[in-house]
Length: 211
Length: 412
Image (cartoon, rainbow over all chains, first blue to last red; front, side, top):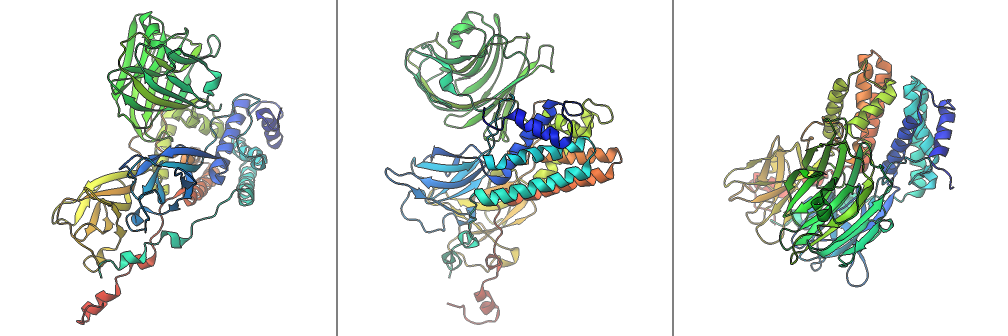
């Protein structure tokens, strides 16, 4: 059995909250806190990523996707791949385009919008940050988040559980530790290169178009 | 529990109309007379209490009024049309003639609810049995258009007429006893057997975990639910996280056009033909001074529940707004989900705990939890907001306007 499974995590949480066998906290209650902590870490770090193949529809700008946010989009022509540039909706129709194939994208709700407006079916490869697919329920279930984040599951669950015992200052300290830990590990292992503001400027040609 | 692996299911497909991959079943050219189905034996009585299944489907083609069963539970093995004809008890969700049906079959009696849907559209379903509602429980099928289960299209409801445990879960089934000459194509994928952690019932459990009151006493479920709904609205307003699009139409000679959502972030002019173009956000003081090219909409501003358009519209133009909104309705039944993106669904729990502590005059803990709530809210908002603030350059009145006001010639 690989480490850690739900039983391993629960034991470590019980050490932190100082209750070795179920009393104030049932196993079900601790499981809920561990699962909440896992989702929280996945959301804050974008560490669970999958790549989906999706297709545009002719004359429809948007394409739905599954997951919670899109990290990047590639257009897949008959051969090779081409990365798409992220824009905002106000830039639609104004950014320089070369031909009719997908060249830019933006996300709104759970859809990817493509510029230029697709005139046919185009294949896209989309890198998506995701949630854990489901809850850890069985004692042998293991976390989905990467190993580097897994120690944070223990304190991430413990700060929630200590509130039940009225230990508010201890909970606050662990909450702070959790947030700091997430930030440090995230900076180390999750690639987050933000777009520069320049990429979101409306091109100058637009400002001059009426002159 | 992770997504169901369909390759671990048993495939019965003599006509060879199914393609089964790990998370996806593709149905091609399946006729009503064909017995193709995919099922798994979870052992006798496995589905014996409340359950929840989630899946995505898309009907990609149909030639007539044919049927495909997108999900089912039963105690027998076979194509669902044949099982129903043999008066076999089952629960199912099926597509027939551009409608989605939720069905309970109890011996000779069928009880169902249905809703008309579109072809070539992605739908996401939550199929839930809640045994605490009604004599034998109630079966729901929530239909959404997004993978966060947020944009609710309709909620199908069947009041169950018997308390029945099931053994076999079906990933797909043809009718098996209908007419030939018709066919259907579809994709069914990402089947999950898992209770959503943030249903109303599960949120109340999490709140009570912290309040250390597992059954209602000092705090009633009714008051906690009321606070939870207030919290959902607070999150929606503060995080501006409920995103939609809304199409509006301008009127000839009218500057302002009404819209219904909370806030318009971006606007796009959709011509009848040709290239749609984004509109630049300006300040009303810039109207009449910004450079325009032609007569179609090129700039916009927001004025309360109205959108101002520059140049002054001389016709009916379609404008697509990218808006942020409030939830459409409160959550009230045990298995309802708040209309929030997944990344914000835990926050109303924190807010409700904080308000609940106030009732107990525990103002210190209340303030601490509220602090965590706002910290989490702004952390997530920073991560996920898709609103890019306009630079000051975009809000400037153009230089040549000053030349006109000075009485000089227009700057080239």
